[in-house]
Image (cartoon, rainbow, N blue to C red; front, side, top):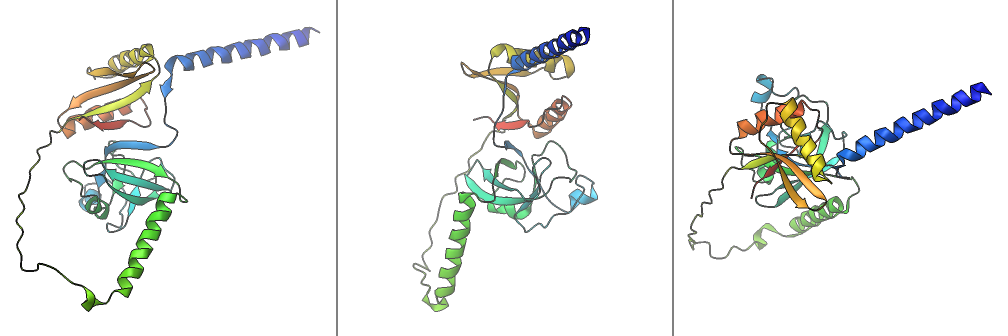
Length: 253
């Protein structure tokens, strides 16, 4: 009888502890995305990176493939250049390659060219998609259709109009200001966001965290703005010491 009573007390104690732990978690209330996505800078591959030991493995520079630290091998991602909306599908061929945590992926020069990326500012949106995605299926069908059309059209059947006409276009130079912020996390409550601000100030040397109210139930903690890529990288690496899994870099509009 005493043994059963003791067992009941122990069980109640464990359940109470679990409830307390749940309350602690509820206090944080970080809003997480169901599908993996990340906005940030990509590392564009070149052979110098191997010599300088900034990356631990070579990649086929003409292939539509990437290295990633978290996504499974053989998964597919959609990569977008937000400045011109160009998009491409790439395959993750490894997730155990060593490179700086600052970069959300290692991409090939082929990908950079297809997206018309600025190599001094290779900012991309990366979203995980499935192998059976309709997006990929449509792309594959489109490429196959183009291939068949190209095979059917004879070479001498191609007509070029206005071959000798010179069309002069004025080059418009748009000077875009370099301005980015580091997104730490989104929270349901302002108090949770304020707690994160205190933690950043107490546990790092970063003194510029801010809270941005997105709605009555969404508060974003940011670092920045930054106008220099090296300063972003320094702050990013310091935040990684707090073991955040998916820090994002957001371009300020």
